[in-house]
Length: 537
Image (tube, rainbow, N blue to C red; front, side, top):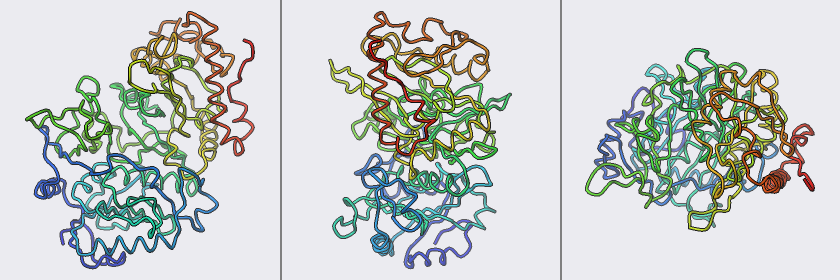
């Protein structure tokens, strides 16, 4: 047994039923890389990153994620397509089967923390089959010191057994793979899938339950940074393709984190100790920080090399469009000390509106912020084939619906209270189209979007005049430094104003139709912030 820093590790594993295993505890990354290479589980790229394949699954499997339904969760979890119930007795039986399967095997165990704020730190123990899984956890979570490892007592345990296959009819799963959260036993049980993101998002789901319900902390699926001089914290929400990573990477500001954060009474803090970035079409020109971070210690997943080389071909998606890299946050320059900041001064909701309807930047009231937070809107082009250019609406509650155990209105109400208490500004930023929908208008220039965000951060938009649009009620600034005035009101950029009005009404209907499923639990103030369809405009 190889272990680093843990007192009496045998007893800890024996308590879980693991009695006949060879374990590698908190093993250094260099040793884990050696294990992976020796077991033919990966190769090194020309920059030193370990490249592995995750097997059958190259992404999360939302339909196979479950939460055990018991006394803790029955009345609190928002049950449905996202949060599917799992029988407690079935969990116990499946848990024992996984433990029995792992007995006699070589396992990799790693202790880590979630939540950078020491007051809210969550100790987690990960028990895994593969050395590269341990590298992923080392990269993505907070790494305890030697002294902290001596005292390591996990509150939660994650057991990830990629090669264990469930029998759906017998075990209560949908198919052979599963990810099950048990809030009573504080165990996440993962099997049948080697996709590392299941471990990361499992802990995120746990935090999305316990932080709001037990500590009054708003958990957020967002990026965050802080000014180098003013120390003003900013938070960026946005679904894929809206610019969340790009716009939070600011050379004048320090990165707090790129994906998951908590907002407590006095801080915004990263849940993680690393980054898990998409690699598709990655280049040194587009994302220099990420590109430079892919070195020894980083873990590349499901990539392909350029022919006859060990140079990664980031344009190749033969295995999956979801090629990924994980790396510890210290691979990035300009990181905020302790991955923390003060309470946010500005929050940005990023949306890529392919309809060209929403303003490039608008100021939201608290009520509007709650409404748009629940909506979590963006849009995308329906397909890439020639001639298919109709935009497609996408709504994801709180910009992270797949990971929310509670009803979205619970998070929105917490957001509203914090916005009022701290007088935080909220901005809706459209990084999508202007002058018409996709196929007719043009994508908003990145330099203009950056200029608008900079103006908001600097307070340059605090004293300018605003005008509200008729349908969404969004307050649009009349002027903004380094941005042409004519683009600030989207209706003015359209050649045919009647076409804008017609499509704006259609987008408003999409919003209203989507919100129907939340309306019964939404307050009157949230409902009042919905867009108004204008008849015969």
